[in-house]
Length: 272
Image (cartoon, rainbow, N blue to C red):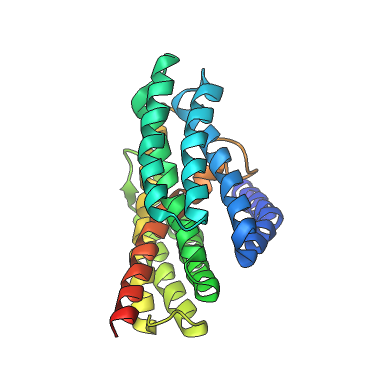
């Protein structure tokens, strides 16, 4: 219990240091949020490189960074079609470059798509509407973080049957249930608290539930990837948390679900 207590304390200390910067950039939007996403994209790209090509981190990290950052910048300027095209071309270019340097082309190409797709959607979600876009972005963070934190606490407290022991031996069904319930509550609370356009509280809870499921799926998927590459953590960027990828793996999946929800609401508003 003492070790677990120290682990929780270290996680909390890291969050206290890093969270204000993320919150401030998200609140400011525009170039501040772009800067946050570029920094995060580069860090994630080199963590991906450390996992997938530990003997060629610079080669793989540079190739993946270029593809992701190019798409992120395109999304920032509102060129979403260009951003998605850049993701595809960036993935192909990263794969070709990695192969020319003796590395796995598929790992490089997948890294661009895996990291770039949610990054582009997060830029779109934040900037699609100045104030409501902020609310939707906060919704993503609220749902993903609530699901992640409650899943960890519920799993640590109640234990029980393992969720997917082959790839993630520490995750339990009690943590999974607690996480998706927390996500639904977070979605409902956010919708009741701030203006989310045409999204009602009930549908906010449904969206939160779906995004929390995606959060759990993203966490499990990264666990499977780490098992494939034979590593325990994606890196050691954040004390007590491992790598940045270990903290945002669920968020990356959740943003896809929330962005889809935002798109549906926009279509309903325009058709009303």
